[in-house]
Structures are given as structure tokens and as C-alpha cells.
Length: 113
Length: 121
Image (cartoon, rainbow over all chains, first blue to last red; front, top):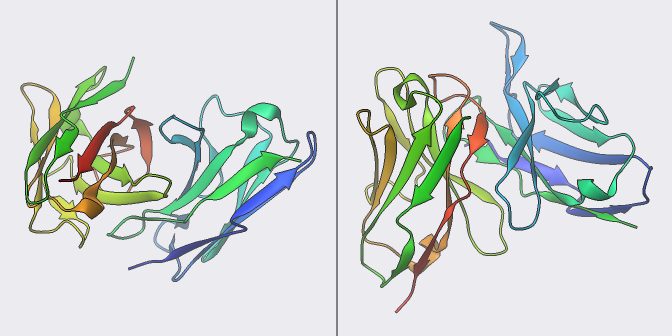
């Protein structure tokens, strides 16, 4: 199984400041046949289901603010919120879909400092 | 509008059974892979099972293999999860999610609001 490890578990960032979340996979999720990283990011606000933010490691979903960006390749990935807004308070999860079982990271809780 | 609505959750005793339903609207269920993901109270997300849109292959997490069965009714545009031999550790919110394409190796682009399963005596 591919283990997804997120860090930190939680972080507190001032409004307007940058938040950076890391996700590391135990094996590469890059498919060389199509040069795509099989890695997605989700946002979950309290009492709500997860919401897809980013697929293929860096492709922002339609309607997602451009302050959210994803980067990385192979085994190391990052979700960046360039200027934290109050509505970004949530838990963020990475997920690999390069193999079954599909696996999620443990989540990173983002709060306002 | 693409929408998923889960139902069927509830309180069940250990060893009991439940069948969850996920009614899809705004798209044709059989054209996409579909999946169930659960979240235990205060915990993270755990993938449970998936149904391929092409060929109808089914996939399970080791934690539920042999106890849970995923299926779909194309005429009803509905996904199911039959859960047998339930254990306390199956207590969770169960989310139904649509996957981006027919293959199971995909991300989840639409989620339902979830249905709560509580396994307790």
C-alpha cells in the first residue's frame, strides 16, 4: 500500500499570510507513460464533505480560488495557500490514486493565528 | 446539477447488517467509477470500496474485504454498499463520491453529504 504522510498536523497562519502543507508518498505516484502525478488535494470544512481542490498534483479545479496551488512530483508534494483567508479554515487532505488501495494523508488542520 | 444523496445509515448492533444507498442525479452512474469513503468520528478519510465504470470491476480496502459488497443499479442510477458483520470500528460517516472517469485510479470530483453509521450494542 502507498502510505501518504502529511506535515504538519496543524498550522496557524495570520490572515493574508502564506500557508504551506506537505505531503509525502511512500512510493512514486508519477506515471512515466503520461508524465502525470496521481495526486489530489481536498479541503474539508467542519460538518461538510470533502471538496476537490487540485488534481494531477497541480491542476486547480474550476471555481477554486487561485490562491490555492499545488506543486511537486514523484513522492513529494506541496499545497500552498498564498494569502490565507478566513474561509480557508479547514482540514486539508492529499490522496494518491496511482494504485489501489486508494490512500489519503492524515490531514492538516489550518487555523487563523 | 450533479448531485449524490446517501441514505441508509443508522444504529446497528455488532454483527449486524446495513445497506447504504447513493442516489445519483445529473449524470449517468455507469459512465463513471464510483467510490465509498468513510470518516470515523474525529478522524481522517479512509477509502472503503470502488466500482469501475468500465467493466464493472470492484475493489475493497482490506479492512472491509469479505464483509462489504459494492454494487450499482443502472436503471435506478444508484450505488449501494451492503455492509455485513459490522464492527464497532466501522462506525463512521460514509461518503459516496463520483470519480473523474471510468477507471478507479482517479480522483473524487463530486461528493455526497454522507450518511452516518453507528455500530454499538
